[in-house]
Amino acid sequence: MKHIVRITVVLALAAALFVSCSSKGTGYEDGIYFAQQTEFPKSGWKYNVTLKVEDGEFTEVVWNGSNINAGPDKVSVSKAGNYPMVAQGGAQADWHVQAAAVEEYFRENPSTEMPDAISGATIHYNEFYELAAEALAKGPVGYGPYKDGTYSASDDEFHNGWKYFVDFTVTSGYVVSAHWDAVAEDGGTNKVQRSMDGEYGMVANSNATREWHEQAQAVEKAFLESQETAVPDAVTGATISYDTFYSLVEEALAGAKR
Image 1 (cartoon, helix red, strand yellow):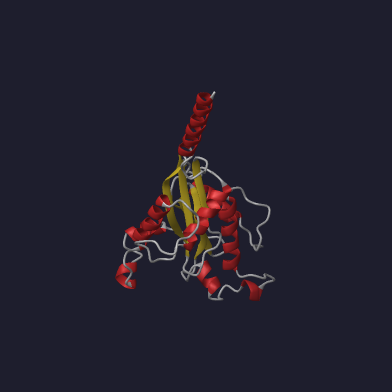
Image 2 (image 1 turned 90 degrees about the vertical axis):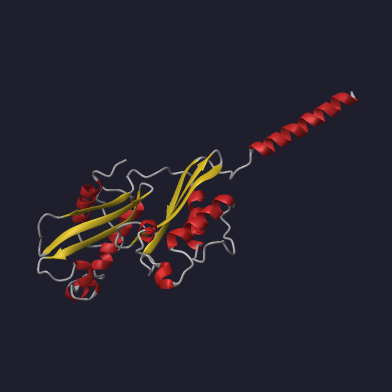
């Protein structure tokens, strides 16, 4: 009887050890996790994080940024030497190199609790950890429907003195930056800049409560949040017509599907 009890105990311990060993990993479901900031800060760069979990482990960790005016992502800009943190800021390494150090640290220390320091990174990385936590809280979402890159479209002709255009940045299949503007037929500054300088005067010369560039930004934000190319019934903060924007959205992204 004692032998039977001993064998049972040994088997139970072995089973517990097996469960313990087989449960090693992050504890997260396999898949693609993604999150991006909802607002562009004063720097003009809005961050996003993509995490890939395979067999319970983080196999890919990507921290990137998109510009308020669209165009190439921040990693690409930094690699091309167009974000010269070392040359002009005296940093120990350029942004993409430091971002890679943060990514590597997270892979080796898979926790959303922000560390006090990361070797090789003097940049602020609180945005990375906030977005990583947000992405993991949402669960796997998969890659978005578009191929990564930059996309644009423009009206063929001027309408009421303006020719509208849009620019987009796609990261991990999601549109992470949208820029809507218009070229002036009179050859002056673009519509966004003219509005920012107070020369377009929507508020002063009409019943509008917000200037054109502010309303255009509201339209861009709504699109980035929804990722839907269909024209919405309403956009919070925008009373201007945005049919042209969504028409150009469809044109720009027509060939971008994965």
